[in-house]
Image 1 (cartoon, rainbow, N blue to C red):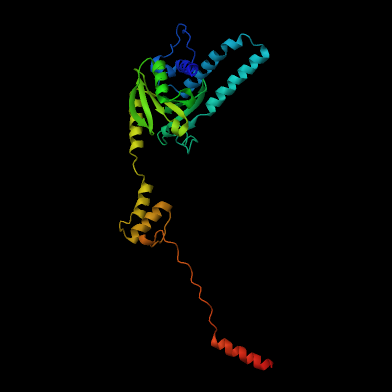
Image 2: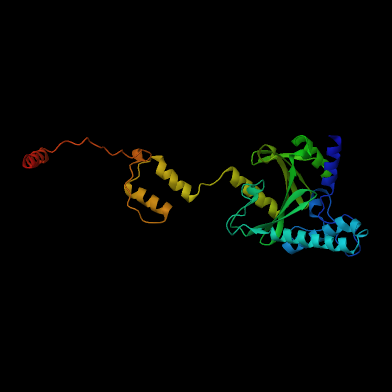
Length: 299
């Protein structure tokens, strides 16, 4: 267990997206502390910036191998790099066009449609990372850690304390999961225990200032959702508040998008339709007389 914790701490300490080597003159120095996740990026980076940073990270990871590879294996390594960058680029999803396929995932609660947002996904150190863009600019990164990363959330929080170089503080729960937070001048980080629901821990890295305010507003809306127009109409149908049949017709028309002539009695809304009554057939006296006459003629 001790080795697992040390290994996890090492992974967390290497959160930088690009190489942590000492930068040459004119190069950007990687971030530290809570902002380590950014590497050489800054909040407000574009999709192109993130892809360039990913290419640098791949080069740094494979640099040691390159020196010992022959031409064939070197070409294969370059192809792997191209394939990985294509996979990252193809993961780009806009929240404005239909569903993303991530709505029921661990980051589903971070997806808000209709606000000019998108995300890019990549895997780093066996962690799934989701880069969130608003109006084309990076403002949040979500990192998913498997539950096996720590024996419990307290242990996971202590690991983050060590990685960030400061102790976290309890924060308002996110989606029912125990939450702690850390911050520096650039970044607010929130660690969330979602093991019960997703068998994983989630860490949200959020831009201080504008991003921080945006995230707080969304958490507030999730905790106190506003009824939609459609759900209000359904409530009207089921409430038994005594509106007229004409109002009922308007509600049904609004829900279905077409004109209906409906006469709803609320007490009958969930009644089963009356079963048709089938009476036993009674003999018709006239038919019986005609039948007797036919029989006489035959005789």
